Every structure is written in structure tokens, then in C-alpha cells.
Image (cartoon, rainbow, N blue to C red; front, side, top):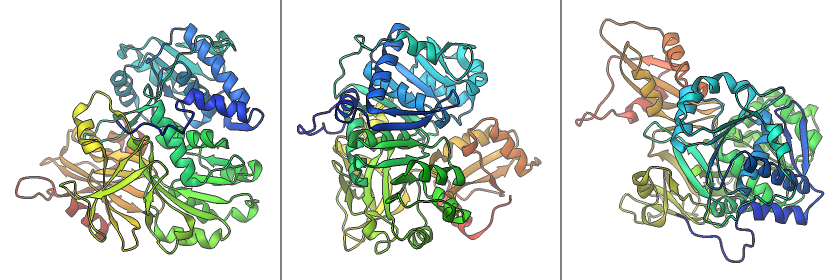
Length: 531
């Protein structure tokens, strides 16, 4: 587990933090988000604190208790319910488990069973999927539906809210060391790991990220990061909450709608994955909108092409460009590159850790490397995870020697600036989503015509990286690329489905029989795959 919060930080739990902001900025706009009931909610800090207390009371009345797991299967189209449920769960000392809404049934089923979810909060549009798997979730006690109309297989979110009282006497005593959120992230095993964050690490993330961005109480912070990601529920919400700013949650990223919201809300900070900025630049729509309020654009979650940074600098000369770089296990905290170095240190992810974050770069023996030498970047600080749920072995490896080993290979230049080189783990970052190559390979191996398969990343102009699957067919078998993609579509979330498939006679291997993915990546760079 990471270090504890410094003694001079007064608010060490999420409920304490929300109460402090409600007292300091009672009438200040806290959150602007779409409700699953098809209207926009605009909540002040006082309203946010009151409503989450009321909802916590309602959740208590239907049986939710401290340490119980609450799974959130909600998109940003129910962003208001995301925030309300998230903060209400914290007030009861229960544990949030946000789940990717692009998962198919069996992926959702795995998460719910793995974490032992007692409660599932779900948008009505996902009910058919939930209905198919609900009897396979042995721990599940209650389904809470978000949306219009009567509940079909559970209880209405509105009814739960109505059950609560403003007094909130049911609220639990919560400490810095209590679990707050379990954030599932893809791992090299191909199955998502439950990253356990405490109240202390969740608050620390807000301090670190907000500090790296230079947030102010006057800021209006806009982003379309899905709430179910660590970027959505931790990076965005917690940094805004700690610094008393305003959070605008976009239901989704659509260039025209996003730019219109920037103008209407007078956004000062916009945060997105690199592909977002590519689409904005390519749209030609920016002259139609008044974006004069924007002071900062931040990008992270995937490699940012150097050419896009240059174009952004030319297109928005008066806006600061910042790079943030981290991982879910760290909050997601990590390093950051201030805008003053955006061009002079093009491609760097920063020189030092975010506030509260220590950084080391080590070799395979755990020794610090010198400038110019490639090593693994490691982090230490109060934002670091407690560990992986039900995986002590992976936890031990990740937190070796009290440092979080990221699996990312980097190098420092002579001025101390850090540059990302490669990843030890075979994780593909497609448009900001982490995808385990082995998970896709496992699905491919289920196809009756597939003998062998290997999946690697290939560069993509807008997404940063895309998926390329190399497939060896069984003798005498014949299938098309479309057959392969459709087969995967029934087994994987859509963002994990390989659109690029190349059929080859054999996979390259070393003398020990291990597949040489380095060779496959080089092949991907030098040859177009069959579409």
C-alpha cells in the first residue's frame, strides 16, 4: 500500500472533502452532467452534498452497508447519477466498482462475480444484457435502474433517492484506510484486475492531478472521459472536488457538441485523449465557436503524436498545452509536462512526479539508471493503490520494494526530462482504452478455424494505437477478415475487436518457442494489414 496522506491535509476521506467544499462554496456550481432521465442536472456544492446524503440514506434503507460493493454500469449519459451514486456510496463506507459499459455480457458477469457486487446501478438501455446474466451473479441482492418509467427487473433510482432523509444519520464512520473504489483495468493475464483504492489514495489523486493541472476554484473543467474509467471518476472528479472547481461531464465526445459546450459553459480547462484533439483539428469547426475562455488543454491516456502537439500549438496559440501521464494503479497519477516545455521538449511526459508523487527509473535489478539509459518508471506516494483484489502475487510484483512498478519503459534526457519508450506489458492503448492483447488472443483461439494468434499494437493517426491481429489458420480451413471480426464482436467489447487482421503461415518464435512480438510489431510498421 502507498504512503499515507501528509498530516497537514485536513480532508482525508471523500465525504470529508465534499463536506468541506460544501461549507466553503455552498452556492458554487459543482457539477454539470446529463441525467439518465433525459435532462441536464446543474448542482451546486451544497446541493451535491445534500443529495448524496439523501441517496446514501435511501441506499442504507434498502440494505447497503459498509464494505459492500456497488457496481456502476452507467455511461456519461447518466453522468449525474454516476456522480451521485459514487459519492453516496463513499458516505456509507461502501465500495464503488465502475464497470465499462462497452463490455458484453460475459465480461460484465466476470467483473460482478469477481468483486462480489451486492448492488448494481444500471441504465435502462443495458437491462437486456443484465437480465441475461443476473441469475449467474450469486452475490447480487439488488438492481437499481436509472431512467424513465417503472423498474423492470429491479428498483427505480428515484425511489431509492426518495427513501433517504436529509439527516443522513445512517452514514458510516469512514477512515483514510477504508476501501473507496475498485477500478478494473486490463492486465497481461487477459483478465481485468481489480485495483483497490482507499479513501486516502482517492483524495491524494485529486491533490496530485489538480496540482499538476494548476486548477483553481474559478475553473470550469470539461471532459468526456467515461466515468467508469479512473480518468473519469478519479482524475476528473476528484481533482475538481479537491480544488473547488466546476466539472462539466460531456455525455460523449462529438466535435460540434463538445465545442458548443465549451462556449456555453465558458470552460477554462479541457482534458481529453490525443484522438480528441486530432478530430477537433480536422473538423474545421473551431472558428464557429467562442473558445476564448479556454486557458488549458491537457492530453493523456495514450501516446500523443508530436505532429498533433505542433498543430495544437499553432491552432490555439494562447492556450497552454499540458501532458499528463500515469496509470490506474497510481490513482491515475504519474508525471506531467508543463506547457512551457510543450515544444522545446516535444514528446516528453515530464521531468518529475505530480504533487505527492515520487518517481524513479530503474533497471531489472532495481537500480536507478543514468540519463540516456532505458529503465522502468516507478512511483511512490499516497495515491498508489492498496493492491489488486484477490491477487496477492500480482500485488507483490507490482509494489516491489514499496514502489509501484508501472511496466512502462522510459528514458531521461540530459536535462532530466522523461520520454516514453515502450511497455513491458503487452497492453494496447486504443483511443485511451487499455486493452490486453492476451484477452483478444483468447477470444481468437475460440474460433474453430484458428490455429494460432498474436495481437500487437499498430500506430494509428487518430487513436494513437490500433489493434492488429496476426492469425494462423488450421490446415485446410478458410475464413475471411469479416468472419474473424464478427466472431470477436460477440465475445468482446467493441473497442477490443480487431479491425485489422493479417493471415500468416506461422508466428515468429525464439529458440524457447516464445512468440516474438517485437518482430510482429516491426512487421506492422513496414506492411499494411489486410482490411
